[in-house]
Image (cartoon, rainbow, N blue to C red; front, side):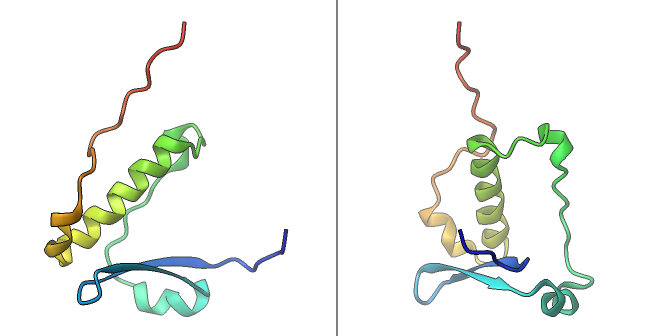
Length: 91
């Protein structure tokens, strides 16, 4: 597997093109642009350091909700469960 330098990930919704775009950015170059902006820490210890399917689902829902705050037209395409989805217990 190819080694990559550390990078930040930017998710953008282009309303006019009705598409989401993911870009990678050098964290040092991004830092001045995000200084003083909303910061929502996600503490991995609260998830027992398990980045599983449910964590990924909830992270994705949070990203879509944040985009929808500034671009509410995307809500018409959203059909997601806001709350955690309980896994059936295995016995």
